Length: 275
Image 1 (cartoon, rainbow, N blue to C red):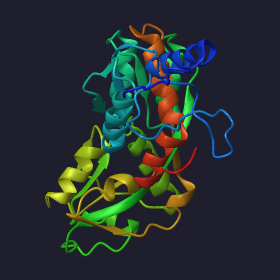
Image 2: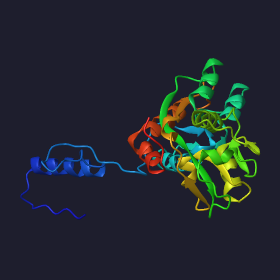
Image 3: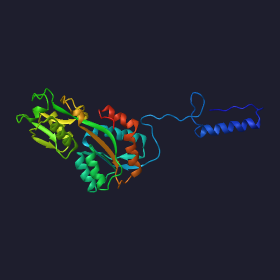
Image 4: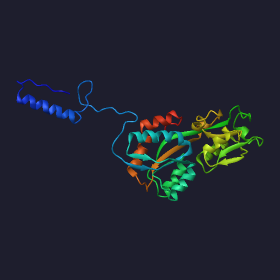
């Protein structure tokens, strides 16, 4: 920008102009609101934030994959100095055992409180916070070739049924749901995580299985069958920074982001309930 001055300009006016130009070169003064008062510039999704740095390793329940992949991407956009390592997804019981045995991780997100408490009791996690809730639904392959109409059909030995293993949160919830309904399921296969159950049903290897509503919504290869009472069997998802985290500040910032309004909006959109 060219600055022109009149020859009659006073020394005081020149000094004031110099100060103004110096302020512009340094980035200017604070943003102002519509009323002219100082304000703070708004930030939206993807806005970079300075501060923490490091690499964060996250262990998360298999049912969180879609949500946490999205949250990790958004978090890295906000914190360019932080890298989220490829997240390890599996059954919460498997991940809890790995963490207790010393697997290098900074954050653990479980699909139930029982497995998180195992980690806390072992002294390898801080204070967990519940960030989401989930419930089960009955899924069948597209077209419902097994003509499954409800939980009672899972007791039929002529139908192929897959469930999560009892040690896995979705397995424990399935056992409770079936018990409440008075159904003794004829189970052909127990899987180590909910993704494996969904995969077998979607591929037609099984006539039915119990998965979380959030998982059922992720594929067009299954149909859901309404399960009365499922709303009473709810899994609470806790998250915590681990005691031996290599990047504790960055890990804590990621946990805070999951709990933030922006992080919660992602999880709500995917069908997770509010904590």
